Structures are given as C-alpha cells and as structure tokens.
Image (cartoon, helix red, strand yellow):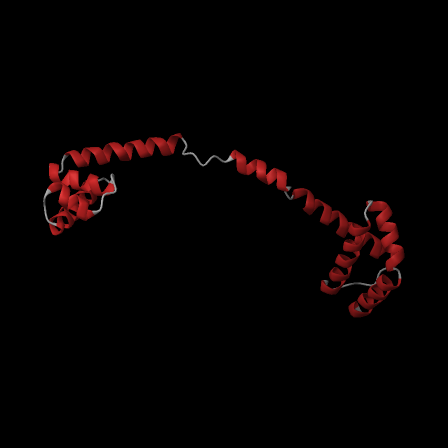
Length: 167
C-alpha cells in the first residue's frame, strides 16, 4: 500500500511539476528555491519508509515542497556570510592573551633561575648556540675549545635545564 501511495505521489509530482513550481515561486518569491524544494520533495518521497494514502495528493505535495523550502531557508539563515566570517576572523587576535603572557613570563623567570645555577662557561655556550644562533664550530673557536667539548657542554646544559625546570 505504501508503494502505491508513493507511486501516486511521484506520478502527480511529475505531472504537476510546472504548476507546483509556479505556485511555490509566487509564494516563496524565488523560482530557484521552488525548484530546489520540488527536488527535495522528490528525494523525501523516495526516502520515506511508510507513506500512507492521502486524501488530497496535490495539496500534500504542495505542503511538502513548501515545508522543504522553509527548511532550506532556515538552514541558509543559520549559515554565516563571507563578510560575517571575515569579521569574526578579525576579532580573533593572534597576540597572546594576559594568561599566556603571564605564563611565558613565569617560564622565562624560571629558566633564568636555572641558568644562574649552571657553570658560567656552560651557560655561555648554551646561550651562544640557542639564543645567538651561532654554529657550534663558531662557539668552539670563540671559546678556544674543541667542537667535541662544545657538544658535551650543550648536552650537559640541556640535561641540567630538563632536570631543574619544574614541569
């Protein structure tokens, strides 16, 4: 029985497509929206499990298409326009907020405290490589030590920092 009702509604939709589109276009103010609503109606007919026979199939199809159009308009109203999205993106600042600044300052003070506990040469080598961006070979020449000793001091400095920074 459901297949018979579905077949009747499909046939009527095809038969009265032009008339339904005209009525919906007038009601909705958009021929494109009316066409989309009728297509959605066809899809809904196909996907609905139990379709009972209806007294007035033409009115039923019209209401079904009208409600499909209203659903589509509501969905469109919930979407943001390109301008609204751009405005929202402008509102989000890439700059750190107060909490992030406070945390970074705390981390910096903790690192400074740990560096002060380190032997002077080890600290100077670490800062020359990590802060000044010097190559290890340049640091070796600057301090008059071997490249191997620079590598060893860097390793010890990193291990010391890792062991003494509270995280």
